[in-house]
Length: 328
Image (tube, rainbow, N blue to C red):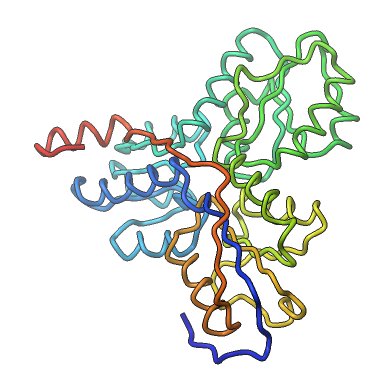
């Protein structure tokens, strides 16, 4: 991190969200790439960013991972990892036709949504997918049953959507949405379609919910909230929105060096959290900067929940470990 001299702006207190940073799906995805680099013969390619964080992707690239957006960039027969966000069956089919040796790092919670979409489509339901239509996760989910699905991203869209059979409508959600926004959209859909079928279990992932709830607990005592995360990280952007909805200014930053002094004028208590794909090393960079540049001596962690979730590695990696005679 670039050294910055002490500022005339002084902050009295820094409040940290204790539940922050990597979720179980992100930890798993990173470990998949690291294990693949260790176990696979030849280059290892990753379709899309394995997670939405430039620092993490760059670190994996330094270790040898090759990141691509299109399968046409990958030599036939190569090792290919699908990112944590998931892919549609068209991508799976293309990978098979090009004889790639595929390792699927899709988050199990995203896979759950895919399977729900397939099951509902087979039963003849129109599926309303609540999400951001340009997000890679939504694109992958839509690919499972495009003729049965429609994306809704706002209450206004929910009020206007038309479906062929209103008595056979279900909804699913992108896993990284705002809890409050999603609740409003669902309420609008239920008013229009009384028979609307919900998911068997909430699709918004535990980590997204926990991080948003932590922000809600933090903002009553914060003058400003900083969220560490990538601009294309849906869950990180939602954390900023949660704070703003509660009347607290918020900024999304990728590194400590992004912080601007003008944001902090008049701030006595600064809140800090990080999205589910932001590494702890960058979080601690911000804490160090707050101490050295803004004179923070009072640092408190706010605990709202303890996360114990863990996802096992995909069978492709487990198989490789066994073949190499190691332990997973």
